[in-house]
Every structure is written in structure tokens, then in C-alpha cells.
Image (cartoon, protein in one colour):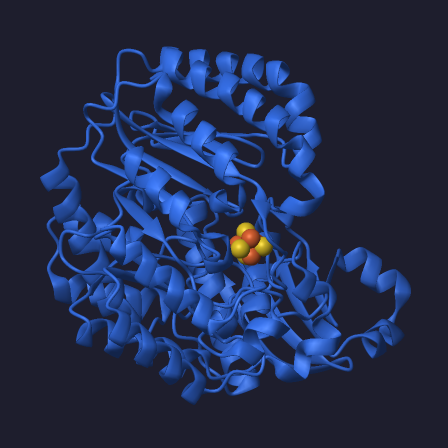
Length: 496
Ligand code: SF4
């Protein structure tokens, strides 16, 4: 257990993220100095580590204590007026202290945000040289050169694709549709997802509510161009064949699809794919699908609660190729419980043989909503620490497969403090994946747990509207949710 003592709540989240990057899965308690003083020194016995940040007018004292004994301390000078600048300095100092204390470095250094490419994209826009951009990652955030180069590579590719695709923030928008059902729940899942067996009687009502939301989205964007549809989940193909067909009919019924550049459906779980569903997707104009093995190791698949085998993946993948899908993505995870580097190598060998058009490599993230978080005590010893080598190996295989990295993001509590990287063959990138990361245009989310992101380039901010994650709530409250959305969209457009 870790204790974070802070006299300025403004930076709670920054220091919390820094501590969690070094101590993933540890419980963290935050207290004010006055409360710590009231309890006295014996409080330290309850914690393995105490990290303190005491702010005064001119500077901030940071210290690390173990059983009330000060191990490291440092001062971070103000001024505090430019919060962003101070935040970066504070995080860097905290990172350096924790790094010395633990004897470990982190690949992204003090960079804890979701979008590591942001700095490189800004640098490219400002006309900075590659060297200057890489130096900024290294000096200001203590990131490794390897990660700085990866961020720069991705940022360059994204910038080029946005230019090629001619995406216009005011004219274009993307649509995300969430189908919150899965054949079973994966151990690490933190998405809005419910077992289809248990929820199958609710599917018609769910799809009816979803249709109302799609009609609404189509209406509020009647003067704009829909450029991308992404159907995710959950597992959209967990729906029965008839429901799936009806759903895909409704998904585009109300939209002008003449400007559509891509149409993705996550067919994630191989055990949910049938010939008929592939036929249905083809008939409805789906251009890209995802079939996700996560690993080609059957025993790991069992541990993580996926009700399919490696053979099921190969069968589904071949079937999709027979149905002439020429843009198939495959997701895998680095750092799965009990997996070693050789398991990752085996997974990558199979994929190299199967030749997908894109490969997304996730690093295992233990989010609070996941079963894995609850069962962390049980699985702690199985959480492997080879994630870094696994990511590096996946990068090599992606190159062998003729792919390049094109989008990237990070999550909290991610294995090895790493990142998730999407690789693809040239021309097979998923535009939606880049749009959601770089906030290039509005993304309208439909369905339980879906979020709408309204980009306001003038103000440089993004307005978010989240739908209820509960299927029942979504069905019952659909009209209220649409009213709320109508108000926020109206205000955002007026203020643009
Ligand atoms: S397939 Fe995806 S959404 Fe479904 S349970 Fe597994 S991780 Fe969650």
C-alpha cells in the first residue's frame, strides 16, 4: 500500500499516475499533511512507501519515505502560474526520484497521458526538426530515444494520412456504434460488455433504442459528411444472424454513405463468426473487420476467459479470406498472465503465416472495472514482466509483415508502462482509430457505453457526452439521453 500526501489537490492525478506507473496494481491512499500529522508517525507502518508533495509559495518539496525514514527528497521550483509547465517539472522530478529509489526506468519516462504522439504532432505543425522533437521527449519527459522515435514515426504517418484523406473538422464526422454483448467475459475486460446468453431477450429492445439514436445522429449531421463507421463492443458478431442482419440494415439506413471512406465491424471473438455473418457483412458493405486471437496459446485463452481456441481463430480468419475480406485486423496482447516471450513468438509466427492486413498490439492493462483487478491477488504472481520484450518482438514481426505503426495510445495501469500500437500495411490503416486519438473531427457514439466527442478547434477543447453503460438504463432512458445530447450539441455548435 502506498500513501500519497499532498497539500495541493490540483496535482493529485499527476502524482497518482506517476506512482501507479512504478507500482502497478498497488493500492494508493491520498491524505492531506494535516491529517497525517494528526495520526502521527505510526501511520507509516501501514504503508510500504510514503510519497509527499508540500507546496509553498516559491517551491515544492517532494520526499519519499519508507517507515518514516526519508530516503529521497528534491525541490521543484515555481512559479506555478503556468500550470502545464509546472506540472511537467513536477512529474519529471517525481519520476527521477522514483526511478532512483526503485532502480527502474520507464520507457515513456514521466509521460503519463493517453496520447504520446501529441508532442510530436505539435512539433511537426510548428516545423521543428526530427532531432528537436526527439530531444524534447528525452529532456522534458525522460522518455527513451526508442519511444521518442516511435511517437515521431506514428505522428508523421497520421499527419500524412489526414492530409491525404482531406479530413475537415467542420464538414466531416465519424460514427461509432456500440454492441455491448459478448460470448463470455474476458478476465481483463473493462468495457461495457454483457454475456449474450443472459441478455439475448433484451436484444430487440436494445436495437430499437439504438435505432432512435442513429436517427438522431443522422438528423443533427444532415449537412455534414459521414466519413467513417466503426461498429465495436463488446462483440457485434455475438448477435444472432437475424439480429445482426437487421442491425446492419439499421446502422446505415438513415445515413448518406456516399462519402464513407471505411466501414469497420469488430468481429473480435472468432467463436462468434459464421459464414452467414461474413456474408451479411459483405452484403452491407463492411470494408474492414477485426478478428482477434489475443494469443495463440490455448491454455492462456482459457485463463483469460475467452471461450475459443487458437484453431477457432485460424478457421474464422480463413473463412473471412474466402469471403474476400481484404482488410482484416488482428489484436494481440503483450503481458498476458503466465505468458513468456516464446508464447508471444508463437502467436506472431502464426499471424505472419496468416498475413492479416493490420496488427494491433496491446499491452495488458489492469483497469479497476476488470475481473483481473479483483483477482489480482490470485494472479499477481502470474503477471509477467516480459511485456517490453514482447512489444519489441511484435514491432519486429510487424516490419517482417510489411506493416508500419500508424496509431498509438496508452492506458492507465498498463503492463510495463508501455503503449498500444496499431500497425498496418500501407493503405490499410483504420481512419477511425486515428480520428479518435487525434481528435480531428467529431465522433458521434451510439449505444450503451458509447461516448460522443465534439471537437472545438477554435477553443482547442473537446466536449464529451457519455451514454449510460447499463443496457437496461440505455433502453429506458434513451429519450432523456437524446435530449441531453441535443442541448450539448446545440451549445457546442453555437460556441464554435
Ligand atoms: S471480447 Fe472484448 S469486450 Fe468482450 S469481454 Fe472480451 S475484452 Fe471485453
